[in-house]
Length: 473
Image 1 (cartoon, one colour):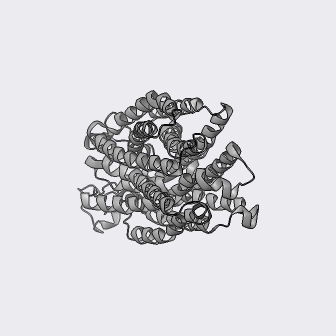
Image 2 (image 1 turned 180 degrees about the vertical axis):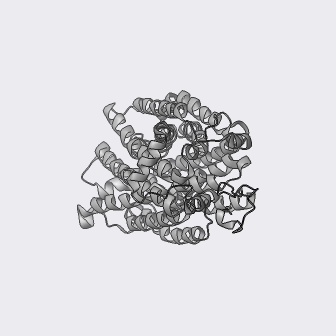
Image 3 (image 1 turned 30 degrees about the vertical axis):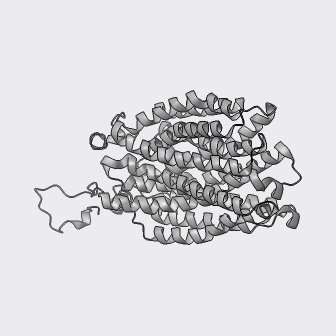
């Protein structure tokens, strides 16, 4: 709990300094674990739901909702709809980020899960183009927009509340669990699709089998809502609220765009760093898991079961590597872990693309695992520590959500679409995809160099994950 001025006696001893709201109780391992589990499981459920589209996109979305678009055009239309979800994410990030700074981290996470759950279930119930014509792709776009709006607060919100609730000596390990939750959701989605595609074959899979995981989202959402309704608010936000009550910190902005502007004015270079840092990890993740699956099925003609096995193997390995890099961050510092991701992902980008052209399932699976562990897992674990430190707690959600989700809309979301377009422009060759991966790793590098986190000497001395940064009050 936070100590406030109102806790003091009405007749304080004049020889003692008055208490201030800057005093706060540090989280314990127990409270940190409870926050990580509640937020992480909720994130797993939400990213199971949000990630379903990425898995099914190259398999059934194009023929069901864009039947008049053939071959590469159909794939482009499918991933244009994929990108639409990311168009809504910055609006969700800006609006719900301001709400998180005003009302708290927990209620926003509850709302975001509910919204994504409703939209995902709706996709599972949506009739195809053959039944309702143009309304099918239009409604699909609308539901993707709703998913994107809710997801704009989900992962960034989980990163924020887990980071703010983590113990200092294990900040990187706990914070990485936010991203691990998303990966576990992806594993669940891949497992279900692998199971369903093996048991529901042929036309039945295209007609109704693919809908089952979307409809299960309704059940998972209820479970997630129960967990998040019992989640405790983060100690850092409670401290900010106490400081607002006594006038030490200004009240949260009502206008979400004014809240984002306040976060930007506090440090334009940090906001820009927050935009650039997630570039490599987001692009690598979506290129390998979304574009890669589509390329294997559409361009190389591999069986659906083979592509799903690759997708599942990649997702399992990326989560295991993420946990490893989170623990490593508490030993050598998250900044150094991010360097591992930048260098490793850059060096392996073109070898990964070269292996794709072999059309051999085993080498492609191995190369995909290496690429995603270097380019996604290391940077993902590190950025869960770096990103919250770029913004002070009173406007952290507004700054983190807006910068991260605008990056998602402009860079990460269109990545599979851009990759597909590059392949089409190259006559089926994926070599330009390697260029895309290298460019986004350079963007992350620039963001890391720009970053000047708001950290005190005490935080640096007591938080191993922050090694390598300089103090800044």
